[in-house]
Length: 400
Ligand code: PMP
Image (cartoon, rainbow, N blue to C red; front, side, top):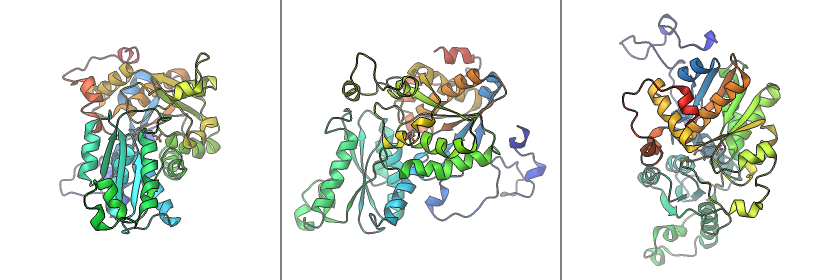
């Protein structure tokens, strides 16, 4: 895999951005891009040295935390959903239209950022148990933030259902409230005097998996020169795994696609046994249950349109415990200086398991969805400080 190694000093000598002649660590010529949207996509594929050395496979992580708007893989999806809605005439820039979304945080942050850039309002509903830094950031971006008590999808007050209902209410009442009449109302109602309400609907909106089909998949294929043995990813909406699998599988028929599933999620059973529920449980019972994990962004108990789009292409699944995810997050800092969020840690546990199943010499690609700085108050508070540790064994992480 020498061809993907970090460029040597001589190779980058013509690619200087500073007079100091330091080695350019991120290859490719620096360019001018068109606004914040231009900072989305084309993320590096990062060789995770510690995991590659320990497994004898090459384990590569798509550095999605380097997307430049909301700093996660959700930038691609937010841009895709907005642009397709604009093409369809559902959204008009600088019209006062409001984008509503139910999100664990990342999609909301990407939507709120792009909303500012394009002249929309963003109204984000998120479960109140998600890390507080996400809602704080949304407020800084000028979004209206609804922190909704955690509730299963079948409940009216679930964060997704609430966003859908608010968008509908907005469109129904738009123009009917005068500015004067709305001045005493709380912000969500007051803003209904303007524009239309658009429910972005990342779970069911197929612009989601298409963003990964058009972007992430082709980028991975090009970055790997068409040589990938396995792709490993968690599913929150299913957009990433479906979009990438749909792009890569026809090109690479031998590719193994593996779902990384946190504890409490029903998707592992769906992939491995073909059912979302145990024999003793009815699906309704499952859907009434919260996904009980500290991991944010992945794990669900229903088949969304975006998961449906690729579910037949998923070959295997790995169930990952919170303890394993916490230990892997610490390992990645300790050994590689890579500081990621909880879903990336889940992906890396599943990538190591996949490496062990396939055996040495294979190339395994996974996703580093967001940075650990989005998870300081919850996941990383549990993980603790890494301190000076250097002697952790991978076995300790996998058996955590
Ligand atoms: N990681 C994080 C941090 C996320 O927010 C999400 C999306 N909710 C995912 C991973 C999963 O991606 P997808 O929705 O494409 O399945």
